Length: 423
Image (tube, rainbow, N blue to C red; front, side, top):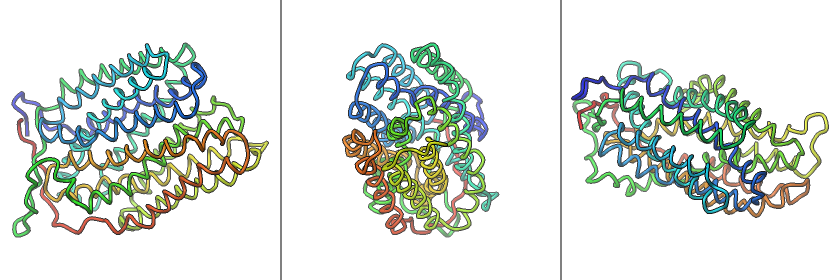
């Protein structure tokens, strides 16, 4: 189907490429933000934690707003607005020299992601519904979305490390340029359409559509599921917050940061597809529990190693163990949870559902970073206290592994593909 301007429905290739390029612009800058704040401006762990947590909260916490906007006005204008917001945030970070400006720039950068990502996910959800109608047993497009995102996550830090040789300002300018190009591409190639509610098959009517886009907040089962799932983003966020602390403790040097991020991305690119196929066979309950258990084991391993001096032959071993566990755990749970949103929505527009899922995650990251910040202050040298932030993180992951299966969606009839209609 085409929109009023003759543009066809967005192809999965365009959507997946958009995720790749968006992550390229993100990972060429944000992983180095904490490094710049600590090394260039001498800020402590609490200041860095608040800025990173606020950025994540502004992005993930406002996903509900971005998803609702996509449901109401269509994905195209909201995705373009997200690119413009991220450009503005990067330019503000370019001028920042103190904590308030870093905080404001990081928050605006997060708002850009809040507008872009739920819009993209709703389009992928619509494409997944169309694909599932003809190939119901294939691994979902959400697994491919993760893989393409990680390709950008591989290239981003590598690009950022090259740009940092001439300064953090160069990375910010190039990142802003990436998002400017994306805004032009979206304006040219995305149709002016929005996804309608899914139509269910005859004889199996869908639940009545909600009276407004915020009604997902009234669904207690979904809210509880989103709350426990939020630990996944909190855990993965420790690659940005806790990992530099660990590298300082092990005296590895922050120069290893790019290599470690690249390791996480290569793991995801090579393992996401087979892991997604395995988790699809095992079912969502097993997949979610397994993913959170693996993440918890990673936190426990680094907690144990944090009490001793790093191994002389391979001082970065604790960091690589942590990255591996968090990456594998994320691969287990993320595509499964994104696919389950379609079941929770059960025939209704999905933007607000994806938004709420991410908003809970952003809230968890902000609160978790505030809890962990004073503990990380004591984790820069090998000691018993250095284990405390990692053990707290492990407790969060085990809690989700134990309880999240209680809040899976009840089975609903298989829907027909989503249709796109002109706005």
